[in-house]
Image (cartoon, rainbow, N blue to C red; front, side, top):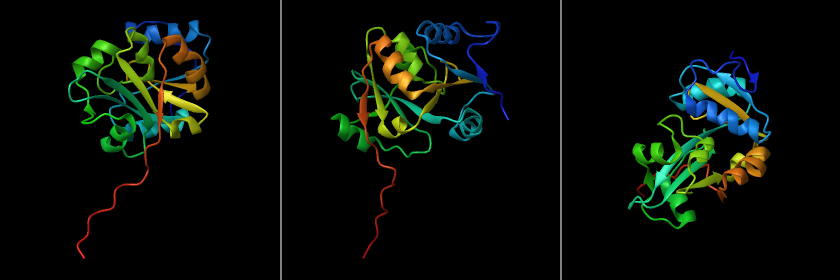
Length: 189
């Protein structure tokens, strides 16, 4: 079992600048958090182990864009919830929604694949990325997210994200309700 620790690491040694920047932001806003250091979280299966120790909803954080690559979105959705672009596209009124290119995610959020996080919005000072939150995330007390690197995970209160973090970052989320059920398979009569 991984060890849940309060706050930032004791030293910055071996930590990336963008990770340290996350701790500085949270500390500066007076947002309490717990931290787990772990192996790289490169799949939702690995995140399941982290989830047991973190005791928070672990989100898939998906970086998306429209076909023209003029509108960008960061979707927070429970990790075990299926995702179909058509349901989100319909709620956002955006046709042809797809996964955004890595270069845009790095440019706007300073995140790399596997480390997309709501904390990356601190780097989006021009508000190029619209945060979208599935309402099921809001049904939990705590949310898990990366500090812009996938070798650590943080446990934050959902209320702190909504009431302190996002206002400080000047990002207003769009709330959506995505379905849990998969589409029924087609059958021939």
